[in-house]
Structures are given as structure tokens and as C-alpha cells.
Amino acid sequence: QQQVKQSPQSLIVQKGGISIINCAYENTAFDYFPWYQQFPGKGPALLIAIRPDVSEKKEGRFTISFNKSAKQFSLHIMDSQPGDSATYFCAARRHFQGAQKLVFGQGTRLTINP
Amino acid sequence: GAVVSQHPSWVICKSGTSVKIECRSLDFQATTMFWYRQFPKQSLMLMATSNEGSKATYEQGVEKDKFLINHASLTLSTLTVTSAHPEDSSFYICSAWLGTSGGLGQYFGPGTRLTVT
Image 1 (cartoon, rainbow over the protein chains, first blue to last red):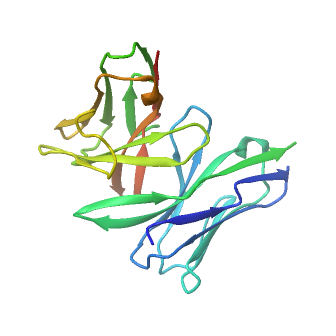
Image 2: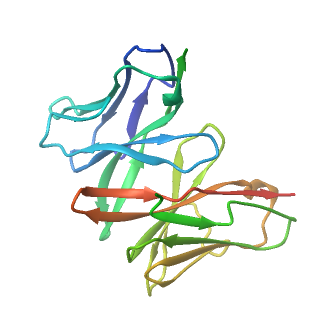
């Protein structure tokens, strides 16, 4: 119940296309859902985040869609560029013993072909 | 710019020795920091929660005597890998929550690549 399931494991998209990565969760106590972008050898960088009382959030080319009833959320990257090639992680926040902890999905390796 | 820094960015040590990794929050105070471990092509695994002025809280299966955490100030947490072995080779990343007028988020350091020979 503490897991976040992410799919697909890898994704190849043509330049200019839309990249879509999906995540699902079970625990309704999760209250914050961020997406991270990680390049090889670097730490994850916070990309965009959403709270469950919002169905969509857009920042530039990145959009989170959130479906509370289905317990699913997704990241859409519009006009995908080769520089977007990275590993993306979804996450969900839970409160445990007074601390805020993130539970991460398994990651999606995104490749944008030029 | 980065809000969390780590030092060193990479380290190579011999089996049996100890290695210390520093994590600093820049321009903000962090009463709580987190230490993660990441193996190649895998997700982030939370190792422990570092609490300023008190003992760290370790996740199940993480040896607290092997991974010593000290959070001596509001901007510095350290992870010491004691008696390191080749299986401890990994990418170690720290993080801290930052709440700003622009929103709340958990920010990660750049990571430390540890190689034990």
C-alpha cells in the first residue's frame, strides 16, 4: 500500500512529440505528488508537483494530470526535446512518525530521438 | 542554483576504511534531512531520516552501525560509511524539504558516488 507504480520503464519519443509517463498509488493518505528529473550521475531535480485537490498543473512544457478517484497521475511533456532525455521519477508524500517521506516510483528512462 | 550541496562528489576508498559524506542546506535551515541510496538504473531507496540534535531514524534493513548519521547543525548532516565493503559502492544522495512562497518541495543534493575497492 506504500508503493507507487510507474510505467513505462522506458520510453522513446520523437522530437516534438508528447511524452507521457504514468503512476498509480494505493494509499489515499498521500498528500503531495512530485515529479523528478534525473540525468546520469546527478541528483534528482524537482520538476513539478501537484496536490490531490487539483486535477491538473502546468508549468511550461510540463503538465501533471491527477485523477484522485482512480488514484493515478501522469506527467506529460509537450514538444519533447533531446535535452529532455533523462530518467523521470514520480513520487508521493506520506507522513510517518512526524516526518514527511517520499515514496518513489521505479523510474522511466526517456529518450527523445532528434 | 542548487539548494542542497554534497561533498565529495565522488570518492574511492579501500575495503575496510570509513568514508564521510557531507550534506549542506544552502541559505535555509533544515531540521530534517534524508539520505538515499541509488544503485545503477534503479530508483531511490530511503536509508534514513536525519534529525538535527537527535538520533537518526533508519529504514528497515539499513544497518545503523554501518551507516552513521550525524546532524550537528541546522545546515549540515553527515553520513559515514564505516568499514566499507565493495557492496557499499553506490550513489548516495541527501535531500531536505524547503518551503518557500513559490511552493513546497523536497530538494536533492547532487549525489556522491562511492566506490569501494
